[in-house]
Image (cartoon, rainbow, N blue to C red; front, top):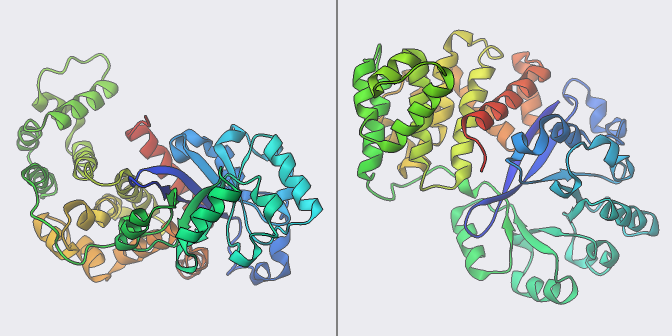
Length: 408
């Protein structure tokens, strides 16, 4: 099994929901799955299996999850496969579900069971034919490049006033800002929120400079615990976070100072905590999804170390994953961002030059982020990686993020 989450944003770039995309088998190992055999077991919604195993709290922070269904799985016993509240699940249909009496009846049944409904890949020319289905939908996903949103907004407000419009394939911040300014869309899906910075936008503010100083202290070889503790003491948010963490670890110990707390953690755990906590603070003025992306990538990369025969470098891979969005955090190009922090040659080569063994892990994670299962499957075959280990590594990263940053 493979599974990943694709966020949907609102006008304030806040995540309102996630689409869950999964694949049960490696198609490179079983080419017949690209043909008619792909419908074997189509009555099972694999994404629902992921949602039910993880729960919406861990998987999406309690937000709605969009789950794809096709012309076969829409007739499955969805209520038996789904163990989470139905009002948190949005069944995402496509144009393989046709507007005949059989499908319309089934969609009405699912709506009565409390599920929300969405549809995608529907050409404008089919809107009228899909009237009965669209009337039951809560969302419609539209390719913004192929639709005049001003006309679409008038049409949907008049005919389907309760449906929310979602722009998909929004690939740049410029596109997002323009669509937002034009109005009409309720949600946006795409890679715009994590596009690499091509040109420096601004000077790094003084608070972030302090954080970079702390990163450089702990990422230096054999760093000094007391020096790290003194730098932490400059920032109340980090002090509070450190004390909360140490108190959870040592319930019966009375922490007397920041240096004491740092000593309680020890060098290895303090380094991990500081890198993660500082990343969270560096992302404070960014979409919350950037924090989530960086932290999950960090743990995912660490978990994948053994799969790529890099088990002895798992801590270094953790930092690479964490810093994979450093350019976005600092609003600098990746080269400028890496010149400000101390990282190993392995990390620098991967993030800046896309070279070396670490680059393989980074590229794999990026393809995984995009649910590019064809490329992910190809890499797994080339590297002789077990699919279940990848899936377990990703789910473990999700759980780790949940425990590290409790959802509000």
